[in-house]
Length: 302
Image (cartoon, rainbow, N blue to C red; front, side, top):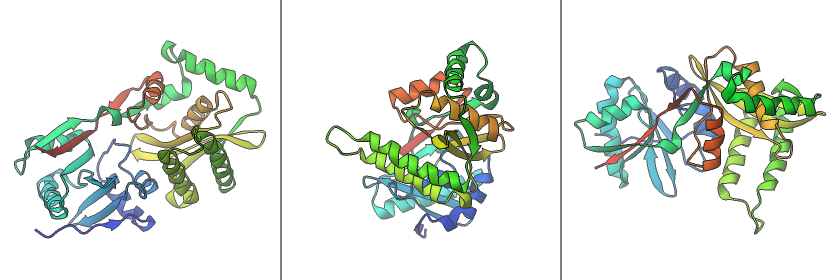
């Protein structure tokens, strides 16, 4: 079997990836061009299309991994065989990550090899009803609505605006300022924080080309919060990034509610990605009372 030949993900690959990701109803927040592109450098994202199948690999600290093959389910056996052969050729242990349930179920019953398939709770996506994020109605979200009302009362001049070229420039300036506050006691910055900053700037630098939706909260002409995302599937938007000035109390609830209201009220669900096993982030995401969690699975060879 001929080995798969990958190439590094580029901006020119967007139409190709968009076509594959739109061909099926995917709920995984990582299954889109923007997410893969913004993290392509630290995770060494590579892709290839072969015989109507899209393959995507990444590596972290020298460990190779692959996403599930993107194709019709009838092609899963052949595509999986190709991936097994590729890992054997490069001399790395087989590892698929972030699988959706249908492909995970296929691997559990696959006759081509014995796979150890495990759920990855730390990377489950949190999905909310758009209408609830807009209205914040009900007892469970009462405290969120109080925070939003307090922000509006304290900052009556704060306004929501869609992201434009001019606002993109302001977002980049404010982002750099906010990240300066992440220095550790020894004056250095956590490497992952730098990766995140670079990833966000990658998208802001290509905002118009990527055809994203974005919003910002402006206070006295200054951006105090911004966010961006895109439609993930027919009924869901995914929020890629949400950042706010840590010194402005209530800025996060304001941009959260405002963006959904102005950009995504016509869709049923909002995917706000995973918590990565970070306790504070999990608590924050659970506090907005998700409608459902999108399961993800990893697999290795037994």
